[in-house]
Image: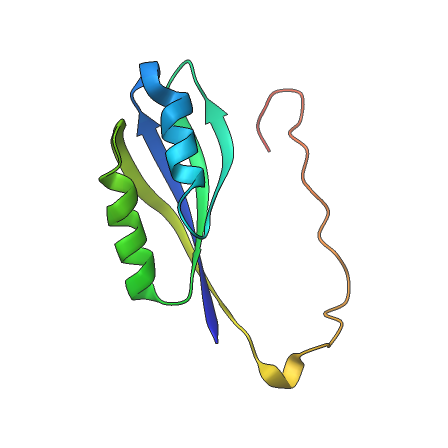
Length: 104
């Protein structure tokens, strides 16, 4: 089974960012990871089981009230290999903290 992860940047009407965020959070497989009300920008991740569902979900996001723009910025596919189920992948990723200048 494949799982599609889509990183999407949404620009919402600044007067209705909270309403837009609630609408996004109500969509299946969508999680809001960042919201900047003063600019109307939100960063979301959408999880789907197919590329067709990913495309359909993006169109649904673009059609929401108060969404001025929504763009796919990253798309990853994870393959669930049943042979690897339960296997320890080894190691864990540590989060990267921005340096003092804000750039890596």
